[in-house]
Image (cartoon, rainbow, N blue to C red; front, top):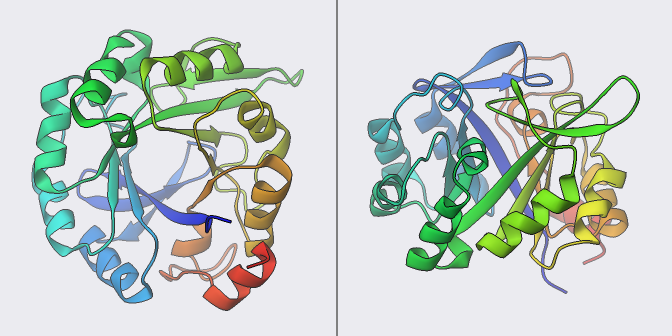
Length: 254
């Protein structure tokens, strides 16, 4: 059995780390470089950095902060945030990142995935899908940090991204994000049942048991964690941390 990756998903706003709730209000977490140093010591599997307002505000990629992060980081890195072209991806990989996470710009240019995947390989591209539920319980894809409504055909879009050449899919529940209530297992399972590429669960993790649920019940390959690794507990102050390895292994059955 392959070990489940548990990936801190860290949100960038300009050159600071923040944490959102349901993609809306956000709190300041701290300096990304100091946070990377702590995760180095904790020996996490990999780190994901998402510049959450880059696409919405149509900002260029902050190469400087990504360079500083890559220089400090010992583990594999992925980055998402208004990647518009193969040249943008080249800059990120040249810095030392292993993967790019692409979301909003795929809706206008799906060929972007194909170009990056063909040049760097499928393992280098993570296709990101943000999903929100309506009042009547219907799931709909949103882009531009939850501001722009897209398709309601989540499975169809997931398959399109898979066919375009993504190596993984990051599935984020906007409604669960920052909630500590657990992943949307039904949503995740609907995707894992329909695609061949690995799926990363995101949005809602509040304890290690939620990770086990996503793996055992929704069959995801990895879990992204946010609030749980930047706060002491729900409603308490900032504390960069990572689940105890023994407890993780225990709940995952290793």
